[in-house]
Image (cartoon, rainbow, N blue to C red; front, side, top):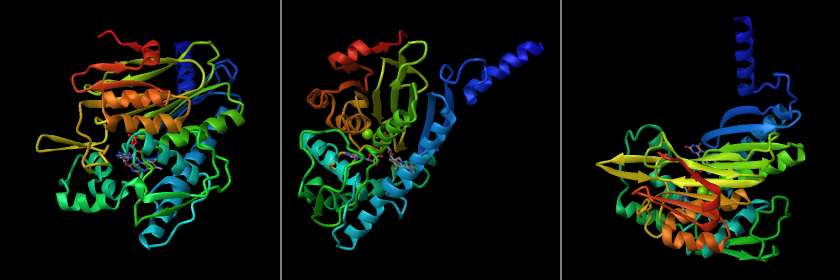
Length: 358
Ligand code: FAD
Ligand code: MG
């Protein structure tokens, strides 16, 4: 009995964060779950000193949110840019934010405006994050006039890049680049990097894992997942894809080896229902209303987090047909799920996705 109890405790320690089951720290994953960027963050790390690496990642996420990306927190760089624009000033945008904005500009063009990080005023008007968290209490559909007014202060055609010194053909996010570009804005647009923030976080986390000498890791920041290195047993990582029509179940999983980023955008997590209509958080930049097409989720597999996150949102807005073309043009793999539960996949995704037999 005593022996069974000690085995159970040992197993529990593996899950909670220990490495005390007689294996080396590199063979036994350290696991930790936290909240950041308004979502759940789960870290599984194989490394000597994995607990320190995980704490490092926690701090990194905290700083990324409070100092750089969150439009909700007044001292972040994004908030300060929005405040400057509201005051009619031209903000100076430093690295690496300038690179993120340039990368978004490229994808805005490539997606024919589907990815638009200037929708801040429209996003705030709907405020779906808050209403979805409180069960929809007090939610009202904004008036058509209010949506039109907010939409008139959005649009990435209002951002102009000056002195572009960053190579145009490089779509990756260059985190350590020096200030290299400047932007001018036509009017007080409001930036919201919610569609790319978790992907950016994964790219930064990747660097921490590499510098910290991790042998393998799987890090989930909400709907975005990073796989890194090789597990000690040589087995592939399994990244589950939720069934958007029955969120307690999984459609299947992606079987991955090495470094990948997987992001899913859908209408099934952040939404409010009112009078039988579902209002979710992914907006059509052309109308200012939640995207209303055949899709309920898109999963993108890419080599970096920025691309996977940006394209999961953009492809959701585009719909299956145009989204497939966009995914192929950007050389990523994609899985689209429509409201009838039908799956459409790129060729590469078909090789990686293992469907659950129901
Ligand atoms: P994605 O599809 O990746 O992104 C959708 C989000 O992008 C929308 O929520 C909206 O913000 C924006 N968006 C909508 N339509 C478009 C479009 N066409 N083009 C571009 N962008 C669009 N949530 C909270 O509830 N509370 C918080 O305090 C909070 N803080 C956050 C801080 C940071 C730094 C980040 C990155 C996110 C935070 N979030 C928070 C979550 C955020 O508000 C979004 O809901 C979340 O990023 C959506 O991610 P996703 O992967 O689910 O969907
Ligand atoms: Mg996204």
